[in-house]
Image 1 (tube, helix red, strand yellow):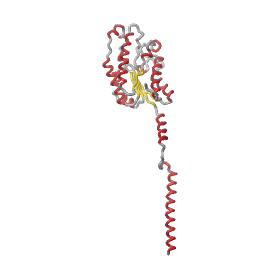
Image 2 (cartoon, helix red, strand yellow):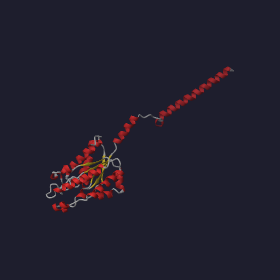
Image 3 (cartoon, one colour):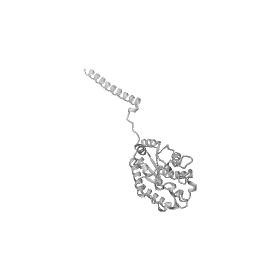
Image 4 (cartoon, helix red, strand yellow):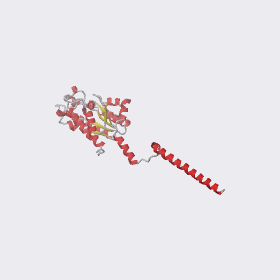
Length: 271
């Protein structure tokens, strides 16, 4: 009798062991055959490296706004500072760069303000990593046929409207895109070396002050000065219309702009 109980106990224990062994084998086989189903512990540093690599490979998106300077009028190569900006950044930063040029020749600040109310333009600005622009020269100087010594003596540009428009432009851009770096070209005087028009430099200086004041109110926005680039170098850097830069002038503008942008992309000081 006791012997029968002992045999049954041994058989019961053997059955339990067999069930446990079968379960363990089945689970192990399932894990090997279906690794995607298993829980994996990922090192946080490795995950961060992978994310960083993915971010670095993303395309750098630049949006260009403004007037004929951003269109590249006067450059016999048709490249302007915008085309050179893309070439230099791709070469120096080894990063794919796309540029959407929305500038319109002859545009004033009022024209750009109207454009910034358009849905498609706002959406393009919203996706940008960097925004570059040149605007305001057409607000300052009327047509060349009006410019003469007598006109300059009595000329008083509309500073109030210009300042209000500038502030609205930067405010709208920043509202639509809170993080993109903004680079605005300052103004040069193409008439500095024209007899009777040299007094116009005082107006250009005032325009530059208004631009700088407006930009200082916006975070991560910068003025790229050009006054010194063209001063006494008009014959070298201006196109035959004596207003727009020529190819060499645009090269100088592009070099100055890319120097600023490049240093920030590399994480160097913004000062």
